[in-house]
Amino acid sequence: MSTTTIAGHSVNVNDEGFMTEYDEWNEDLGRELASMIGIDELTAEHWEAINFLRGDFAERSETPTLRRVTKVGGIPTKQLFVLFPKKPAKKMAYVAGLPKPKGCV
Amino acid sequence: MRQLLVLGAGTAGTIAVNKLRRRLPDDEWTITVVDSKPEHHYQPGYLFIPFGTYQPDEVIKPKAQLITNGVDLIIGEVDVVKPDESIVVLVDGAELSYDQLIIATGTHPRLDQTEGLDSRHYGETIHDFYTLDGATRLAEVLDGWKGGRLVVNIVEMPIKCPVAALEFMFLADAFFKERGIRDKVELTYVTPLDGAFTKPLAAGYLGDMLDRRQIALETDFMTMEADGDRKMLVSYDEREIPYDLLVTVPVNMGADFVDRSGLGDELNHVEVDRHTFLSDGHDNIFALGDAANLPTSKAGSVAHFAVDVFVDNFVQHIKGLPMTGSFDGHANCFIETGNGKGMLIDFNYDVEPLPGKYPLPGIGPFSLLKETPANHWGKRGFKWTYWNVLLPGRHLPFGPDMSTKGKRMQEMASS
Ligand SMILES: Cc1cc2nc3c(=O)[nH]c(=O)nc-3n(C[C@H](O)[C@H](O)[C@H](O)COP(=O)(O)OP(=O)(O)OC[C@H]3O[C@@H](n4cnc5c(N)ncnc54)[C@H](O)[C@@H]3O)c2cc1C
Image 1 (cartoon, rainbow over the protein chains, first blue to last red):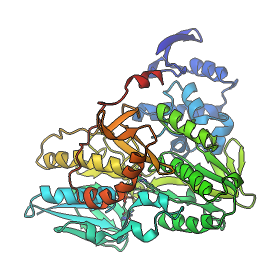
Image 2: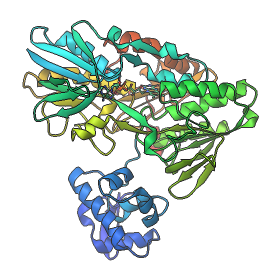
Image 3: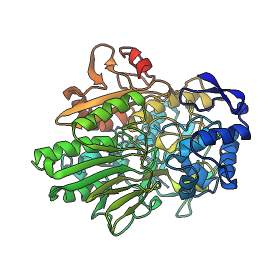
Image 4: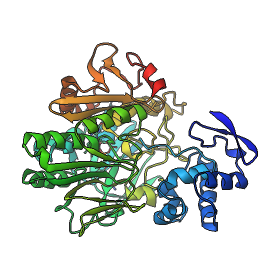
């Protein structure tokens, strides 16, 4: 755990750079985090996914899996791969300021 | 009379009813268990069937034989649970009421969840070994196979026995060597994870073991479809892996009635407290074994440790007392590695697999995270233990809580 400065805010992150405090996140930070992983513009579709992730986390204290974003959030998996290329589960969590999804056991 | 109803007479359901019958007075509690199939399968045995080591009839016993006297077994398929009325409805329309309900209907491979798996190519160039029929068919095919590209893929986590696909790879390597055709076979292991396994230290060991056997590892591969006509496995990020034989571990899902009853998550696993297995929001519904959405491995060994904790808790719960036992997620998996050797890993919710000895610190006889003949015999001996000790609910010489004694803890920090 350490702190770092993103978009002028001091925030807590883990050793892979995932934010660790739910309440430290805001939309500006989201945009900044996205650009750090090569997503230069967050469209309405990106926000739909991010908002689902944050809402679901608030209810269940756990970063939702891709399947959950698809089934409960209603965004097709294929689309998530377009929005957050290659590793959507991790990238979405990163941008939304949530813990990295647990590798399943 | 109060009624305990158990759904599913697999590993967890069978151990639970056999143990609980000894703990619940006959004149106070009836125990009924419902299962859609009359036969119990020793699923860990499926792994050995494709290579001809076990025959199908060695892994089957009638459920009626495995359930103790004083427990009623009903063969029937569950259609829905109505938690508000404390009623379970079977597909044939029968209604069963309960005071306490245990859901132990497991998790099952679902070819239908992935494009192209459930196609005319299934049983020809696409196979699975997570069902007895699939494993049996694969044995026929492997027996006559002359070589080519054999690809094993895990579609999505979690799956039951998450090490089984790796074991399949190690056994395949040994099998083809023994047949003298290893040089004609290309082996590739495809996983959605970012390494060979979920736990970092074990992933390192297992990854090296793949390397040494010249088994290619393809990580972060989220399978979108198997294109059977082109014999190509395709990921969502448009990578393609060609195969001649695909052995797939399909998406594993809990029973559909869990979803219909409003008790499940997106994979139909019952949402429960991870220490007591009490269902979220229902004071008289528990889920045991693979059916529950616990953040630990789905395995028979876990089910067995979990039921140990559960039984004492349950006796407190029905007396209106708080449940004092707390399950720690203890999992213990023998990993068959080929050539008469095996490996063992032991972990829980908080501590990843570490090297050391098990169950007796410093002595063993089993070695953790290390390939030894003793571990192989541990795995092979597990079948006997399963039928004769685990399912009847007899005591094993080691308890449910994981121990860190005899483990080399310092390796964790450096991993
Ligand atoms: C290939 C393979 C290898 C494995 N190797 C190992 C190993 O080495 N070690 C280990 O510990 N574990 C291993 N496992 C995992 C182990 O078999 C399971 O984790 C264990 O059986 C789980 O027990 P359970 O009671 O939760 O589910 P199950 O034993 O699967 O029982 C579920 C029961 O519910 C019934 N059922 C389902 N739906 C319904 C319905 N709608 N109505 C009525 N009944 C229903 C089924 O018929 C079944 O009898 C392996 C599994 C596989 C597939």
